Length: 135
Image 1 (spheres, rainbow, N blue to C red):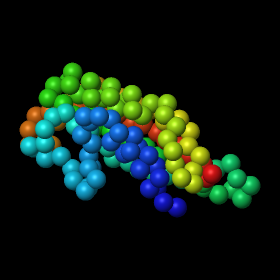
Image 2: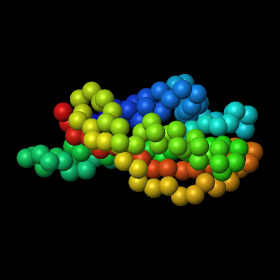
Image 3: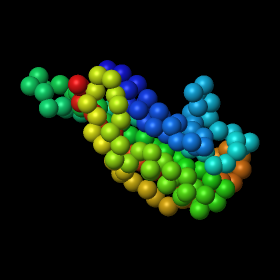
């Protein structure tokens, strides 16, 4: 099974927001110390849980998007996180070959300073979940 439909769904919704810079970008690049602020980094993982099938197969896709909304200060990070929330929360994406459920928001710790790119920025991390069944 490919996790591609889930990642494509998340990234397409985020990239559809006007003015929102999303990483990894379509070439697979990630932000650097010179990337203009604000921006979003979305890391997506997918697992397959037992689905509602007679065969007892693991067919229920459960994707988690760990979304980093990055800004020059905590307010900018939260504003960017609000754009992400508006793009994802409760949306039922189009997924060829899958029957998706609405995207849910699972966690949101406070924005915090981050210097991992070599400059001080603020990072608001949000976890979103997308579940789907074959269909």
